[in-house]
Image (tube, rainbow, N blue to C red; front, side, top):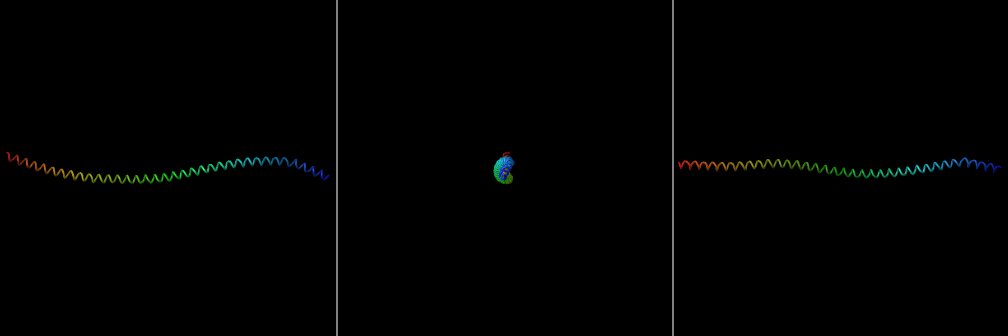
Length: 128
């Protein structure tokens, strides 16, 4: 009887434990599915991280280019200001030289005209 009791208990336990094993197998399958989904999500996050890293690198390169451009623009502005000042200074010098030249030529012409007028008056007096 011991053996029959043992067999019966084993049979009852198997019947009771078998649904639990089935449920646990179902839960294992669900966890495997969840794990697969989480792995897929991890892969997507890794791809997103790689994309962000690539974007960061591109933005850093753009920052460097903008810094170089900003420096170049500042240099061009400074050069333009110096050029404008040089033009103003040179125009003033040129105007001064031109004025001096015109005054010298005008004075020389006035002297010639005065001399000619004097000579004409002398000739006119002599002939009259």
